[in-house]
Image 1 (cartoon, rainbow, N blue to C red):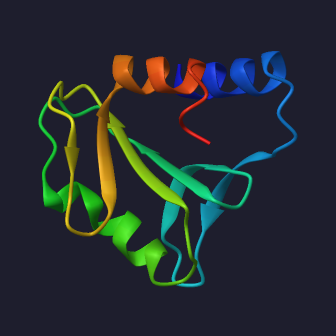
Image 2: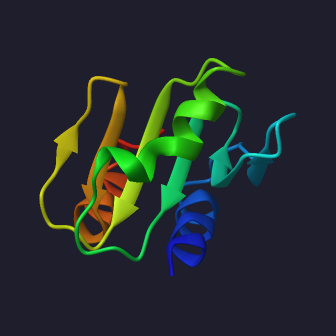
Length: 102
């Protein structure tokens, strides 16, 4: 669902950016990379914690990201000390279509 929405937005808004996944040299992966600046991880969890950030934290050490977002079913938006943002999937879509994600 997230992938389809990202593809739709990029096409509709005529953004000139790529949509890929990221694998680090240490074999850590993120679900989506938009361009080379925004990293997005998706969790099916209804409650997000710092534990869910392990992969994103590892990826942060290997590259400079403009924004790191964890999208889930947890309705509580949070910004962690690590710089990782947590967004409820509906809020993520609202920000995406408002042009505020990248």
